[in-house]
Length: 374
Ligand code: SAH
Ligand code: SF4
Image (tube, rainbow, N blue to C red; front, side, top):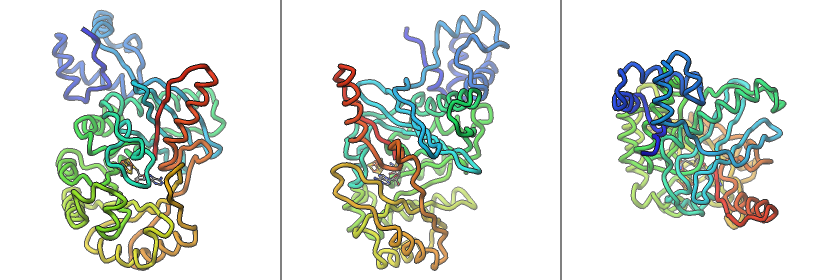
């Protein structure tokens, strides 16, 4: 029997596993704390477990996160890992240090089936869902890496611990619900990462039924990728809109906020020159979200090869933000981080694939690796 990966298990699943090897359920809590809270990389380190139990664990289980293919740090301190998820696929994880927080942006799928027109991941197509172990493994791996370089001072910038997690990397998290939910539970579990639910943000392009399930199962902060104020335009940018049009999506947003009192929805809006950035679009948006407690986050479009789209000018983005602010909607403009290492929102796929090919051609290998992150 091949060993099970304990990173695949949330607290409840770990208890079942512990019982299946004939141990008392309380061992699950000990294990959880060792793996996620204290960041053990091997069973050997788990010093308060009996030697016989450690040996049993080493036989039946493993702690496996995706292998790091590349690790780069931007001039602004943003750090990006390229991770191997097999079958010639790679995903990316990005750490963004700021004065008051450290945010880890993680991926949930290799590729994405939604196929938004402005997104390089979408252009790649869909490869497969990540497992819970591959999702939480990104946080587990990043914690280790950041702790290690804080100890050695290798990065040259002061590394901060991860205080926030955003599911805004590659993939549509709500199209991988069953693997994402245990990962979210681990992020919130006091014996694992102990993050408050407001410090974990899931971003969706609008999977309405799963938004309702999430409100019930684990109401973390929700970001919704809106990108357009009417169905005609949104149909052309986010094809999922044909299945869940705006009024259906906004009704789901209202239900979500009702289930998570004192919360608001963050609407993401990618700024595309001449496409969705006119004053008239801002006015239409204000009317559209009238009764949804919300904030807006405007994302300057990050171009990638063959997108055929351009980023709105800074003046246009500021004017658009001003319209929303004047209507009483808290609006922020996302700062572009890590673009010197292609770690900014939506950059890459093509890029990475090309560069990887190049480096592999240099190394005499021919395996193409596709990756993307927002
Ligand atoms: N699939 C989810 C989460 C990942 S995308 C979603 O769509 O919400 C995270 C954010 O990055 C989304 O708001 C997405 O629209 C945005 N994004 C995608 N491509 C981008 C690009 N090229 N430039 C800027 N933002 C982009
Ligand atoms: Fe998928 Fe999000 Fe990219 Fe759309 S923006 S293709 S939903 S990852």
